Figure 1 (cartoon, one colour):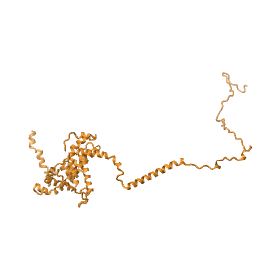
Figure 2 (tube, rainbow over the protein chains, first blue to last red):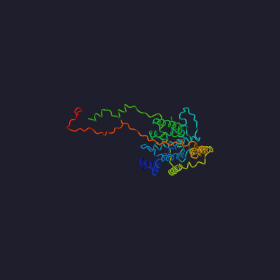
Figure 3 (cartoon, chains in turn green, brown):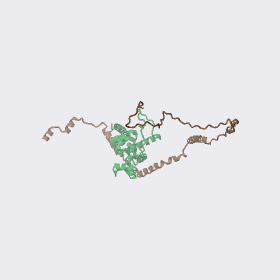
Length: 200
Length: 174
């Protein structure tokens, strides 16, 4: 997160007044966080930038709906998540993702289709390790991936993630655990390579 | 005194250590920690240099787009659209014509001329004879008679005068 030059309340007031100064400050502080979140969630740098830009446009248009007392950061991540999810839906409609998946559970089948459309950006994921991790992330279904990214990469608290994803705290915890377990399985070989012993 | 009693009693730390069960790390603790370490080592992605300018440009474009959308009608409409629009206009025109003619009909209608027989005044010849011509009866003004019961005129007859001091005379005395 960029260093803020004004307190959050002042920033919100400037945004409500539609002052460009406030809008620029908001982007300066949060743009990198949102691009990073979107990139780890979508796996494409161009889409991530697009999603972050769309997030700020929506902030500008719907700042009147921002509830006083809510945290600006949480609200921004909520919008960014919605934008990223709709981008995933569009990808699915364009046929970039398989529509059927052999899943015996059958629950939330549409939402949990693994998104393997990782387009590694050499400028971003310069190392093989980073690329392998990102590739593994993209194989985790979106509901678990967003929870893991928000917690372990963006550093949001469980409560903040619950607000962003609009689910119960218990659901957040279970999604994070499930997502981590999936990642561990996917990164088993990398673990061996990096740490020398086979993880359980 | 207080210090001595404190020394004899076990401290709160000792109590808690003895009474509370030890919490152990979960089985996958190391794996999760290493995973978090790996995820934390992922390079942070930054926004491009012209990020803000692009957002402001896009924002301006979305504001502009609100109005010209309706002006793009003729470009990408299917024949069905025009057919439906034509039918709509025809129905609307028909409805307007119907209501317009309906309201103007009574004023513009030309009545046929009445037949001449109906307009001619026919006076029978015997009505011109003197005896048949009756004098018109004068209108009688109906007056309302007042009954005595309803109205009593005050009488003008002289009344007997009674002189004071003199007793009334009896008929026998006279």
